[in-house]
Image 1: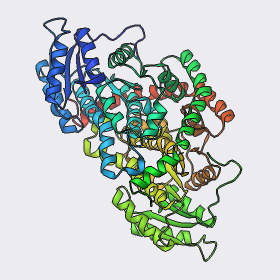
Image 2 (image 1 turned 30 degrees about the vertical axis):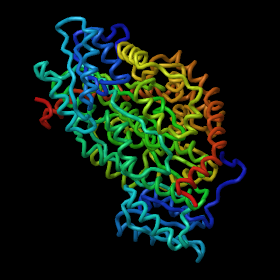
Image 3 (image 1 turned 180 degrees about the vertical axis):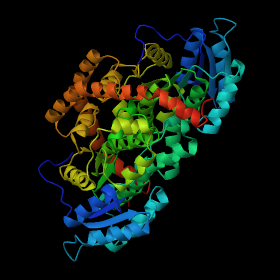
Image 4 (image 1 turned 120 degrees about the vertical axis):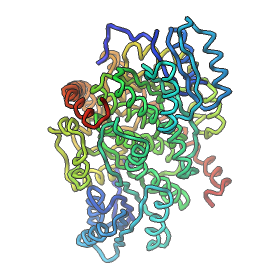
Length: 312
Length: 312
């Protein structure tokens, strides 16, 4: 399905980046501008978009590049449609060639403190933030006969989950379910699907999520190392250029990718065998230690529940 | 985490079964009644519930069994709360010991014919149908100190996906994401989590979904064999009794389970190694043939799109 000999080149292509005003989305937009692409960044906050646009302009390679920012909430079909129409306008109505769907936020929490509204809004923040844009982009690409690319950004928490992510992992797993289905369905149209599974990204989003993260989750993640948004962006673009379906950014991502692949097209069957065997041995050991950390937290958690009035 | 020596016995336990008036849910309810459990079945349609209740009564083992039906839409926190309260009432307010969340429907379709409303309602029908009941059940079990069981019913389409399931697989993958997170988090409460991944079930739901399923999807599934609701119910109960986290019902389910496990606790590391190696070799071959079937459908699909006015 993917041309292994011919790398996809962003030069001269119109790239539409949601979540493009901060974190990995902004880093990706900067990278694409550096590579000569036309770039449209989309986000909600007008101030952050303006600051991002200034940053993008610093990396302009040629005056022909169309570099724009658009303020829209893309977690709805209407918002995504409006954003797409606005972005296509300077291009004579032609829709973008590649959609980098980096929008999404994480709000870790304890499951039993949730309610329907929070569950729905967290699902919107992890799944809805990308799925409706994907719908709108797909329809337009098919209508216009553009053999473009759809790039989802899930998370390693779309490969596995632990305490604290009960309203986040469903959305990140759901993105994978969508990507798996579309990867098959888009063989009807010649549209490529990619999905990235980064781990911790040292971004404003990460700072925000750590403010509310349960202590036991922070404890489990103590020894985690993360990546900079720039590094994640490099990995994502490289993966897209090489035609990779699942894109991971570090060793642990590779291990999870290989260990959960099932029937998802693999990038390399030899390399994956190595990572899968590593995973087969190492992941249960890691999992046991995670489980021990959770069990050790029981007493403290019971006190937390009493203090919150959840139990007597 | 699971006691391998001691099988969980439904006798005398209160089992709450959503989607309990038809298909696998009803079969599970019948099985639990046969094993001496108290059973509450929950669904929306009052007529079907009455017919189901009559069926359950035929299998009553003792006069002490409390066998009831409740008509509620449980794809909301409010509906699930009301259902749970009603079902707990004959038990002096004590919440059920085990929640078998069998509710859910499938509506296969082509992605580019969807819109936000359909995407949301399909996500509700696959994820929401179980997630809100899980929330309500969890909160009540923790509050009452009941060390119970939560049993989700996903699908093999929560392990992989193909053309036609772009609004169904996200929900089934999301259920897995939720189960993975809760399996970790519930070590804080000693509540067990199980999640089943059946393939095709020869049920009323299956007939309904085939009426709308895209031709190319039907073609891919041509050679599939399915299971009866009774067989699926037997597998689910056996899996719960044996303390299995992921529960599969056939060979292909086992292969997918083993090939996508990642860090999910495995039931048997030896058996899984066998299934994973089978999958490593066989799944890419199967996938290639699925992809070929989709590609071969391009021409017909273009005509379909023209006829529907989606392309010119």
